[in-house]
Length: 486
Image 1 (cartoon, rainbow, N blue to C red):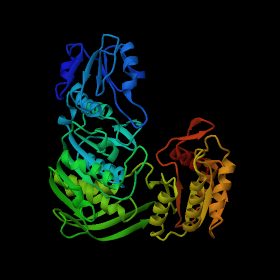
Image 2 (tube, rainbow, N blue to C red):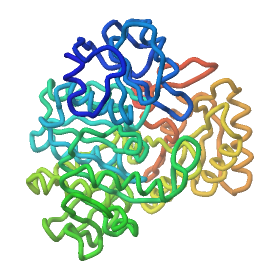
Image 3 (cartoon, one colour):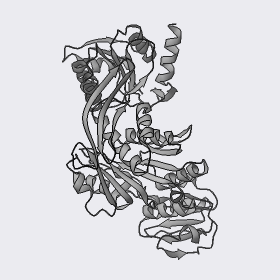
Image 4 (cartoon, one colour):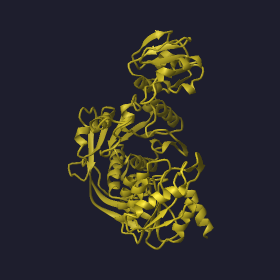
């Protein structure tokens, strides 16, 4: 594609050379420059791509896209734009021939619930025969193919490339987690989203490379509602109206508030061996009794968000109900089938706050015993270990302390730190340093009505020891253990 075509949607000035050159790819990491690529100089929190402009040109870049002045000795064209991050998004859209226009695009922002809501929408749409691609915490997922990403919301080039791949794979919809940082740094620019969803707002991501304060955090999330056609917001969240200030979209709402377009009422917890979830009555624009296969009252809100967007898309009640009954989120209170009369689940909780949330949720189901298996990461603050130990000791009937990415530390030293926290409580515990052995201990000693949560790994499929990441998927370990115990 000619450089002029790649630049067709943005304002620019030609500092050197011309735009009649062929562009083979767009690159923002100078180490990945190949002949004919356009190198876009992004400014990050720690690194400024302008410092690598000369290096990129010497490696064969056909064009360098800048917002600051640079000296380039090679023949590469130099193009100046106001903001290289914004430029990368529009250039990527044109380079991949605007794939967003061929998809129903759905973006979800909010402090919590994004990953689960993505999974719910995908489950519903696929019941309706609509093939979806997703982008978020779990990476880029298209069919059975999963590609890991560095960020919840990847750089705009990856987003537009993923959408191109989705279109080529026959997808009709794309669902993305639009983080506040992703919105702030133009990672979802050049997409006119069909639907934007707001789940909730609470304290997070303040300081360092993220947001200077809560006001900026909120402003960045609110950007989504200037980038979509229909905004769907949680009316029960006190910041929902602030989210809509300056919005350019149609507004729909969901919540327990009876003024909402989609209203939940009569929510109850559902529990049986191997199944934890919620049920509630839906009224407003749609009426039905809903069951959701993810535990916790907060699942009602995620389900409402998913129902709202799918209803707006014209999806039937039958498909919505089937999708929510079958939904599972890898590593998020993910129930793993076992032959016994107890419930075994995997969750990503890897700090005291997330552990508090999941264990408090599971306590509401009044298990015979709540058993928590967990460890703590090496080369991380010791206070995290104390806090996790204290939280599990307080909320669990039994803590099973084991390994979890010990990195360059001795796993037994980490376990001793966890025990310091547990000692502040009356909680019982056992130590089983090898994680597979620890899981086997839980399964062998399970009693009817127990809920066992394997905390910390979630969607991760590795164990990091002494700088090496070894493959380890807890689902595979459970299958191996059940086979061994037959």
